[in-house]
Image (cartoon, rainbow, N blue to C red):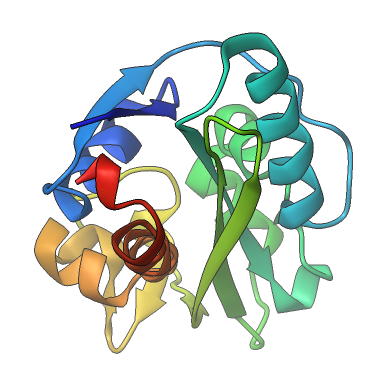
Length: 186
């Protein structure tokens, strides 16, 4: 079985994806890559995977995700990781203090490159709301403030989150692609 390298430094994200792709040999590949300043995740993911293929070869993938808040015109979007690291959940809650419109969505894009250099993108999205406070100890990042069907992602189990989340949806599409196109990876 071929090994797929998942480029991430986030152990929680790696665990989520490895759980979803349990039929595959997934390696956490902690290398840096440039993230261009772009307005959509697809552009960022495509640029990143192109750089990675040029420097490390194929059978490699990355996942980029973002929280897009309607009232903030999609902010933090592609800058979600940086925003979480700098102002965190409490900062987002302050930005929305007193706002009634708390609609938001998470989006995930997986970018994969095979050994030949062929690139494929897979995306997933889940709509919800920004809750008024942090709730739950599960997940990571903005999970404790992202409300979906009455509970935050921080309040649900990994299995439940993977069935409903943006990342779960993108990984499901990626997995189907692997099953249909790369039998030698199985």
